[in-house]
Image (cartoon, rainbow, N blue to C red):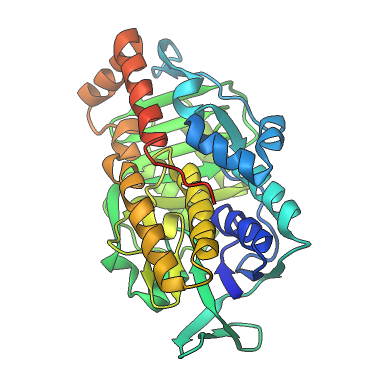
Length: 375
């Protein structure tokens, strides 16, 4: 089969790895001009995630490149310690930079798959025998199947299913990542509706803030920098120092905290994978869901002998219950509570060993709540 995957971050190359093993001819198209470095750290939790990584043949390399989850010390405006957020809470069993994981997957698939960088899909037209695809820069081509692994703002979902507003719910917060070249080792500070963290394992500088839904260009970094600086105007602690460095940040990324909600992940010969189908920003399960979903989708296509209708139904039926974990949380409310009382209650939780242990066991159970097939 000839299969087109849109998106070369984590979900897309994970699927490409499996499909190439099963003998498919795989093309991956990515709007960025090259594999994207940097980004926040991502993590894997529990036996299910480890099993899939092992079957992919990359578990040892993921451990070799891991960042190591780091404790985050939560401080007040004078820098005094209030409590500590343990590294295992945010780092799972193993944590790795998103860019490092993407590079690893690209290394493992670039010789067996075709990668087309600096391009994007402009239209999808299903025919009796395939999907006719036009591109912004390349000549039109026809594929047997098309996979949207292009994130929560999926272009494939928009073209095949409908506008983003029909499938993505804004959860009332935004987050930003920046490389600000600033001193600080694992510090986090809150004001009502705002969080600023520096020197953590997730990102060099990390911000979460409450907001009404903003209208901005997702590709205009300068506009996004201004949105962040406006949101943190008048802040205490080291916020003025941090905001002064934002205009010159070497790396910068801002996006909404949102949730994808779909009852079916496929339509005809087009199917969605990862955040495009069942994402919840910063929920802590997105990367694990992406690699497990890729394993299941490729396995079901192989098992069905290429009958995409059967494979897509099995894939949806297996993943929908497992992906429910992505619907339950709102990291924005947790990381940036909108009241002082909410901040105190969140901090108190980390001081209660019994409560924290129970919560960690619950997240482990969510991460393993699937009967993983052997294909």
